[in-house]
Amino acid sequence: MISVKDKWLEKLLQDDIIECFDTTFGEHYRLRPCVFDISANIIQVLKREYHPGLEKGGYLLATPEKRANSNLFVVKEVRFIRNTSLTPWEQYRKEISESEAAISYALNNDLVPFFFHSHPTKSANIIGEAFMYNRQMDTSSADKFASLFSGISFGKLQLRLPDVLVVVNGRLKGDTFIGFYGGLVTPLDFTERKQVLNDTFSDKVSDSFESLLKTPEKRLLGTLLGCLFLFFLIKFPKSTFTVILTGAAIVPSIAYSSLPENEFFGISHGSSLQVSLIKISDESIISDEKFLKDLLADWKKKLFNKAA
Image 1 (cartoon, rainbow, N blue to C red):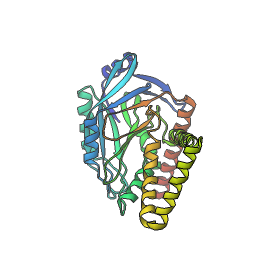
Image 2: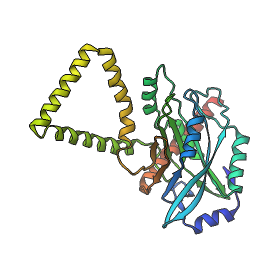
Image 3: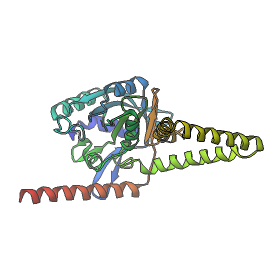
Image 4: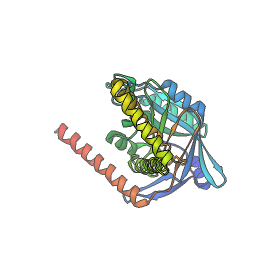
């Protein structure tokens, strides 16, 4: 973490953009509940630079603002940092000097640097990439562990910041997933939120089927559609299965857009995106922090055993 002057910290505190939080492992600063405003131009940059076969990363540079008593971070710039990993198709390791220069630039221009990286979706074909896109829309153990070190230091205290995951729908580059995790303000993964959205989508589909069978006319229409499906399945099995697989591949993206509120993550189809980091329980945050501290202890133990 890079140290910065207290004046910048005081401004964030005065505007109630950050707060002090005791994790029981130590005191840190963290963001208060806020909304990230990501323009279509920024999303276009992320899509254009996305590589389906390699992990890329850098910083989203955002301006903190107050609007209608809400905290808003408006993403102004994207700074890509070279990946120095020897296995860039499965790991992102930022080049240190480029990273420090980007953070210094951000702080000198009153911008907050949020670290981001991408997950690759390369597969043998476009349908495979669509399935990989769904699979890669979550954090790995390495992502969670790395989030423990994201932020800016102010003397003895640190401002912990959430990291950002970016995943684009393979070579199609139709959808762009952007999710925030960690930083003592968001969950370490998107599992719970995804479950809420999947349940909501399932309920909507179930209601639609029930509506389809309410009247004799609709039941007849449903029967005709079923017969038509069976006809195509028998007559054109390969093409029909391809259509089914394609549909299955895009269902998660549809489900994750089933509610208007983008909490912790959102999917853009090319337009601007707003993602809310809502308040979650301190108990949940502390539990996540304990999990990360245990990972850190295991990592140190492995290093010690390797050196012995």
